[in-house]
Length: 213
Image 1 (cartoon, rainbow, N blue to C red):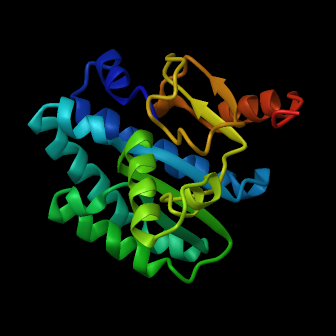
Image 2 (image 1 turned 120 degrees about the vertical axis):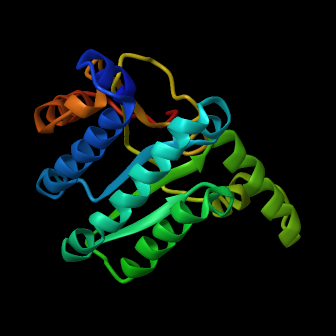
């Protein structure tokens, strides 16, 4: 969900307003996904690099934004029968954020209509390393199948959408995206709406997927 900070700058607003409008963009899209046949959505909310490279002030703001969103939208997600799963090392995030996420996961655990995966303190390389470590610890032989089982999520996305103009994965779902279609747009995330999503789906539907064949 790239472009929140640039969106705020374009509108002469503080960064936190960009992040808050990014949450609203996600909420709008989750509303229309079921009608478009989308049952699983995975969003990159906070990377491992964010915790290291962004200022303490912005991290505090991001923690507040995500924690407040988890609490605000909890009942709505339950009402929409959406189960939430968190990818990443949430045990290493501030207590406020960890507790709000764990509560969200717990209260949506019985939902079954669709799945929302939140990548928090997540990095694709870090996930692969942890999966290998789990495989070794379990006594299994190293194999693609064993590593896949030990990932935070072994679901393979059909389509990865990156708004904001940059054409790279930035450490997102590196293992799972081996055969994903990639769609890039200059639209900043807070401005990404249903029409932009449909453009991405039209692109996806026009691709011939061969999976290495």
